[in-house]
Image 1 (cartoon, rainbow, N blue to C red):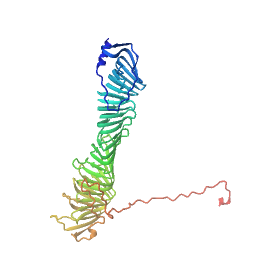
Image 2 (cartoon, rainbow, N blue to C red):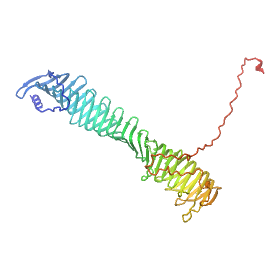
Image 3 (cartoon, helix red, strand yellow):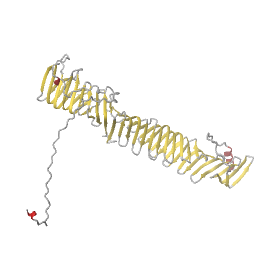
Amino acid sequence: MIAAAVILATANAAPMRLKSSAPPRKATDEKVHLLNANVMRYDEFENPGAQILVGNVVITHTGMKLTCDSAVVYEMSNSFMAVGHVHMTQGDTLSLTADSLYYNGEAQIAEARWNVLMTHRKTKLYTDNLNYDRIEKKGYFFEGGRMVDGDDDLTADWGEYHTDTRQATFNENVNLTNPEFTLVSDTLDYDTQTKWSHLRGPSNVYNGGSRIYTENAYYNTNSKQARIFDRPQLFNKDSQLLGDSLHYDKISGLAEAFGNVFYRDTVNRNILLGDYGFYNELTGEAMATGHALAKDYSQSRTDTLFVHADTVRVFTYNMDTDSMYRKLNGYYHVRAYRSDMQAVSDSLSGHSADRTLTLYKDPIVWNYDRQILGEVITAWLNDSTVDSVYVDHQALLVERLDSTLFNQVAGRQMRAYYEGKRMTENVVEGNGTVIYYPYEKDSTILYQIYMESARLRVIYDGEGQLDSIKGPAADGLLYPLGLAPKEHSFLPSFAWFDYIRPTDKYDLFEWRPKKTGSELKFQPRRSAPLQHLPPAIVPEAVNPEDNSDERHE
């Protein structure tokens, strides 16, 4: 009697009905069949038209089998309410257990409540409120649920699972955890066969020390690959990567970015921009192409060095150690700008540990009104200024005094030293030649000096103006201003490349080459001649059995 009262109370409760805008459902004429019950009775007064079943109840309907402790069957509506140890099975792949279940035979919808577990193959769905539509082959929960699929554990406020496609959709407070990552999203589509997840709406993927923010992404929990769209962001321990879209592979550590790429290294304080880029979190290697631009603010928080090249690459060494450092390589059409220094070259190489920046092939470096060029130029950088600049072969320093007068220093090698942003000394080795115009006390120029020496040391005063020149066995000539011959007014290698010089950080993407004929001339390097020994003369082998006269001769 107690069991019957419980059944009647549950049966009279209004069960939740499925509301759907789907096309008309295909009805079935097959009736719900009772296979077993320990007790069966009718109560036309309490519950007219209903069969009350108690004990070991077994009911079937169109391939579905259900067992429970007690049930109420409504013959007219071809439905029933099952209570206590409810277990519904369909074939050998679908199983559903619950404390209670209402089944509509015409719509073929099961409404399971309390301690619900739906198992389909290896996928398990836990909730307290689950409706399963047998026609659409879909189970859905609406007051919180959890799905477990192998190592993937997923919770959400609302969700549905399709047993035919084995695909699921979850909404609101979606949380997917795995031994290696955690995923939080607003909406998630999940395929239990391929393990691909589609994240829709604000979402975060936490993987070790990295985090991906996206509002539209596909992520595979097996391969740890992600395809991310709509301007996603990848945050690592010490870096950040953005792009219009990202492809990320956790196993290889490779992240590729496409369109408006932005990469920031917070440890070494540099930024890399481009149309395409990649970053490998395992090796620390990064690259940018297409309007590539590197910003380095490691030397100064207030004055950034901007470097453009067709391709910019960054390599990291000794990762995760106190001795970590990076190398920056840029090649083809290099242009650089900082307020106190500008440069152009064919290619460059930067070293964060040595604080050096080396320019190759027709390089030019400008520092205020001075221009330095040669075959290879290496600059040593301080925290916010240039420490020194070394020029190897065909070295030339030009200082513009006005539109017609230029101080000039040339030699085989040259090293210029700076204090702050002011040049203090310039040492020239090999075939040193100087043309300079000394200032008088009233800042006028009356003379021109021409000097040659194997080694020259050019000294600059506190105002950055040329003060004196020293050199062993130097030959010099003094001319009144305007009376020096042309060959002593301009060195053979003289050139002033103001039309090439970057004017600001925005003037880096337009390549302006040197005018024809002003490029550095190729100078072959001398090398020691190779030594070759004449080939050894090997005597012909003698046959001991040869007794001919020729042998004895």
